[in-house]
Length: 237
Image 1 (cartoon, rainbow, N blue to C red):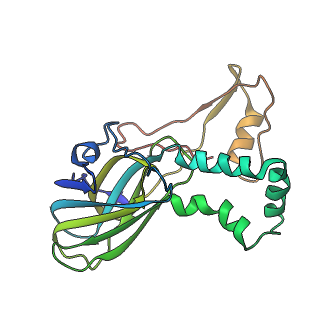
Image 2: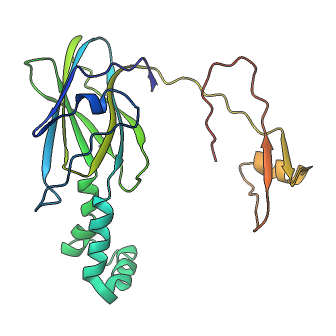
């Protein structure tokens, strides 16, 4: 989606803390509650309120995993002991398509979800979607589109998530726009150790061919980007 200017929450409340200051901006200051002392799957709810907005909106979520998921995964491996390799190989062969072992291995996906609901103040809660990201301890920003039936005006948002599993940096409302058109820009030159390499350029410009690299290889890709373009640039591999 194209996204408008972020609208910061007026309030953010969790059962044991005020999280407003931690999630108002993408500034590296994060909401980082401790995990539950006895249940690493314990669920908590965060309630947010936003000022007036209009049109189709989305909730920006900038967050990262804590080390809870990592701990659970390696503890599972510890319990499996010498059978861990056989089990994982069996899962790849789909020998454990169901049952307690399959459920245990897939448990991280249940932990790694933030369920999002929204409503007008005093209205009925409407499911919006989920923010899902299992593994990275670097922040990832996603947008969860809010229901189209949400009326213009103030918005309340409710997040249901695993306590202590997340470090949340920013929560904001944005107006959603049509996806901006992307213009592909192919490399115009490829240098290998400072020398033009026409074969490498041809391989990188042909989606049916590959450039094979070896230890010690270093390639510089040169792109001609239009002057004055007020745009973001992404590298597509």
